[in-house]
Image (cartoon, rainbow, N blue to C red; front, side, top):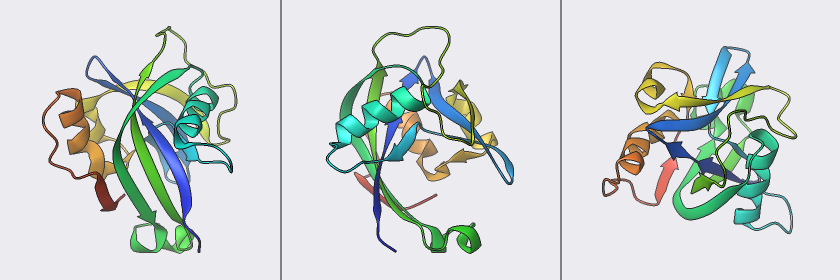
Length: 155
């Protein structure tokens, strides 16, 4: 098991989080626009590419908010993801131009759409990583963060 470097875009606008809607064996699940960093690609370039592929828009990549690990054998899907180890770099991003329809140029095979979800709904749906929900509220309200940059092995 080798750690995989990945990125995620944290895009909040008017108390709503831009999420990717996917389907897995348990049903609908929501997450940040996210994906793996490719060889020769900077983290910033990876964020821009992933958002374009999954959401269909260009973004300004801002500061690094958090670094999160996911070590599959420590979480609920250990039987399916026991050999997964991802180090994810989550960046604050803003969309260069907000338009009505958001549709990626090359979405993941499990992706069903893109939605703006009200932050207060995140705790009531399957959103991952759930451990970051309190930090998203801080980010949206410009509250000084309680989380350190490294948030650990969370799901």
